[in-house]
Length: 268
Ligand SMILES: C[S@@+](CC[C@H](N)C(=O)[O-])C[C@H]1O[C@@H](n2cnc3c(N)ncnc32)[C@H](O)[C@@H]1O
Ligand SMILES: [Zn+2]
Image 1: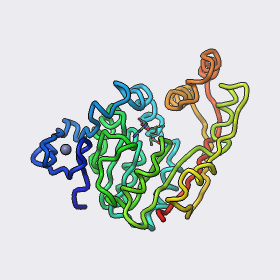
Image 2: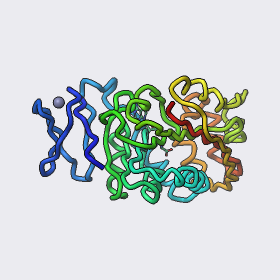
Image 3: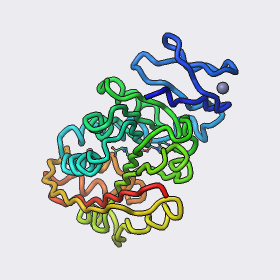
Image 4: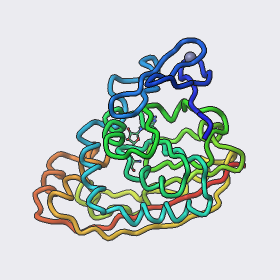
C-alpha cells in the first residue's frame, strides 16, 4: 500500500523516517515502543482518556481470547474474503481480536481506536496490522485510501468512512441483533428493549447501499468468570442498578445467546 497516513493537524501526507512520522509543515508523531502511532492530537480529545477504559479492554481481551465470539469473527472473514481487499481499516478496533483475523484476507490491515490502552494491548500482541490511536470522527487517512472498512460495535461516522474508501469500497458493520444477550439484559433491567439493527440502513443512506446481510447466533455457556468479563466489556451495566449486576455475578454459571447482525454496505 502506498502510505495512506495524513497529518491529523494540517491534513498533509505523513512520511516516515526511522521511528517518526512527519508532514511538510513539521508536525511529528512518534512510533511508540509497542509499535503503534498516536495520531490523536490533544486538541482533538474531548476527554483526557477517550474511549474504552483499561478494565473494559482487558475484560474484552480475556473474553474474546476464550473463543466465545469466534463464530462472529469467522462469519465476518467469510463475508469479506471474496472482496480480496488490498487495504482494510478496522475502526474502533479495541484490543484487536477481529483486526488480527482480517490479516488473513487483506494485504494491508490498519487497526484504529480512540482508546490508547486498547491500541497498546493490540499492538503488543498482534504484529501484522498497522495500529493507530485516532478517532473515527476525523480519520488520519488520505481520501480513497482503503477498500474495506470494518466497524464492530463502535460509533459511526459515515461521511468520514465514505471519504476514506476507494470508489466501490465497502463497509462491514457488526451490531447487536434484536435479542442479543436477552437473558443477560433481562437480569439487568426491568424492561428489555430489542436492538434495532435495521435502523443502520438509513444511517448509511444515501452514500451507501446495503449489499449483504447475515445474522450470527452464538449460544454461550459461561462460567461465573466468563459472565463477569462479558458484563465488564459491555455498556449495558452502566445503566443497570448495581444490585442487579451483583445478583447476576453471584451465579455460578450462566447460559445465554449472543446474536449479531452483519450488514455489508457498498459506497455509491
Ligand atoms: C464496544 S468496543 C468494540 C471493540 C472491537 N471493535 C470489538 O468488537 O472487540 C468500542 C470501541 O470503540 C472505541 N471508540 C469509541 N469512540 C471512538 C471514536 N470516535 N473513534 C475510534 N474509536 C472509538 C472504543 O475505545 C472501543 O474500543
Ligand atoms: Zn501537519
